[in-house]
Length: 434
Image 1 (cartoon, one colour):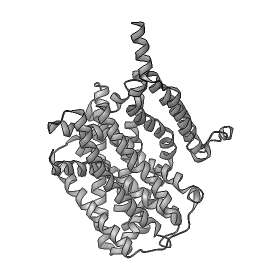
Image 2 (tube, one colour):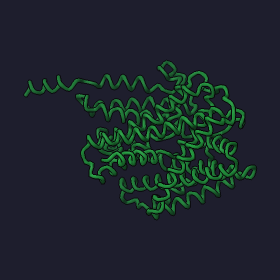
Image 3 (tube, helix red, strand yellow):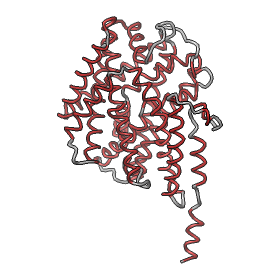
């Protein structure tokens, strides 16, 4: 591939990831971290940038998406993991969130005191009605809009980043909540909220398909080009996150107790550029959210149709859009609060899956190792999720890192070590027996 092709692939990968969560979570984290922003930002970058990049490479190494990566598990378990991932990035959390971010940044700032549950219901019905229409009538128009919107959005974020550095609109607040004692760990957990690791499990296969269309069929070359494209995308995401963290960290005094990052960005842009700038940002973000919603809806409907052919694509799209409209009416802050325990519980499984995809060839019994490690990550991840949801689990306070919401890490590492057996001795024993 030419250098220009690789750069184009990198920007395409970046465009896949740039969505609602990438814009709303860093400002809120920066605002709450305040003086401890640097550590919080570092933790966020690890799970918000590094982990999705590794996931794309794991997809390339496995030669397929979730169902391929989980082929060493019992088929029913592999399907269950895939279904859970697609529900999370589909009608349960990520897709409804696009509509709520569009409302928070594209409509609510202009309603003022007129914003109400009724206006939210009306917007979500219209938004997901349009999503339904576009998902059922996919064509080049939406792709063309997406190709225009992403560069414009990136340009606006670049201008905003420069403005934040040159003319910060507020002061740096003191750290609050969990950011006081453990800003790095809290930032790391906040990175889960972007859901980009689950997105990477889907996007990785799309990128491989693009490479195959360009005649790149060798897995080594696919991995090499994916690394280069992934680095470009990672740099782009890191730039967006750092600038939005800085925006949030210099928002002290602009508002009291913001409920989500969308509010912070909308107010900040209004202070910097006036109503005209806010209007432009609102329009671009809303349309970008719409293209993301259509992409996620189409991908999820196609996945479930492929998994269960009796379910028609059109019927699945209708059900998903109706579900998204219903879920979105809980409001952005509530949806985020509901999603956090689920993500804390299931992210360890995704991380273990990625790690074992790279390591499985070093095990004498890869099937056993795969199952053991994922089982341990699932069980201890569930404990972290229940604790985050507010369930009293003081009984497990003896577990290392349990108080930080990371009880799964050490048991999963121990499982990896216990399952490890050098290949060579086993092969040599087999040869002697033969």
